[in-house]
Length: 204
Image (cartoon, rainbow, N blue to C red; front, side, top):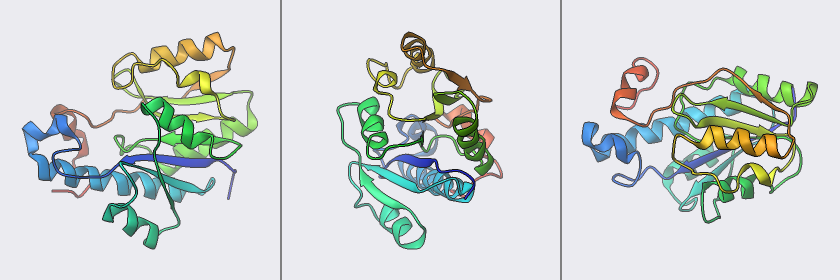
């Protein structure tokens, strides 16, 4: 193991009609759920392959879905249920579960590679950065990593909007935290994003 940086994967159960809703008009509820299932597997696989620390799958509405239970049986990942009024509270709750460096990702960006986690962990360990972010193309981020729990980064953020990244930068600046941003990546939220998946995931 190169570095000790826990990886938290935040995931919603891939239930047809309740996940990837913005894609449903283009590909239907069942295919949207199948895509989401594939992206959960992709996120967990990349996190494990990085070998920078333990990988935890934080699930909503709970950890009972067969996709989560199958992953628990087949790979070295622990399951936890998300708790909190909004995404920021749920992310912070996962981060605060243990001390030390933690990287948090969702499942909407299948373009994160093991090397991204290795680089993130290395930056937290070997630089003076308090926070590392991989921005998303839509004004959010696809990865945030902190050297220790930083509650100020997750409060009063307009989650799910194009303001998330800018607001997080503002929170870091106000708290005098040292923020480092890596190369931005696209995520898969809208029908026009699907072309980027050709040859990357098997979900159809």
